[in-house]
Amino acid sequence: MAGVRGIQHKNRAVHPSGKPVRATVILHPGDEERPLYEELVKDMNVSGAEVLREAIRELYKRESRRKARKTAKEAAENANTEAQELPKAG
Image 1 (cartoon, rainbow, N blue to C red):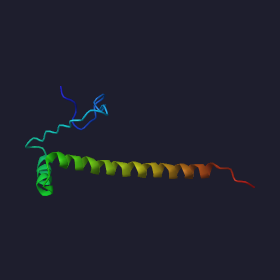
Image 2 (tube, rainbow, N blue to C red):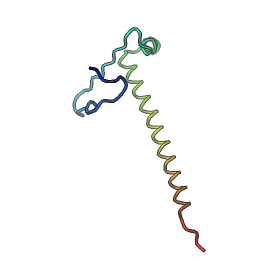
Image 3 (spheres, rainbow, N blue to C red):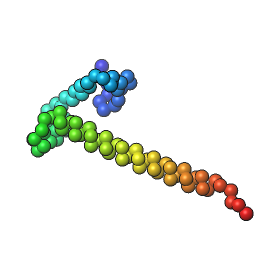
Image 4 (cartoon, rainbow, N blue to C red):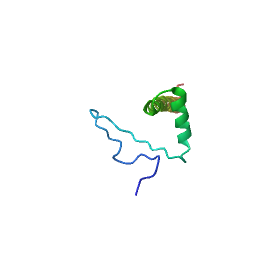
């Protein structure tokens, strides 16, 4: 039985650094992403593989910004907590 779509499965994300990675994406005629993919290939005038590479780069940028915001928010919350816990001199 195939795994659940869109969920990272255990032991499947380990890729040897010296070997190429083949990412296979099958877009069936009824999939909602297929017309989007076809439009991007046509509009960008590049191969489907290049569209996917660009999508990966953009998703990585978005996730990096999200992680940075989360880290900054947690640091600000920790700073506020520490400031409240300090005893007042006097």
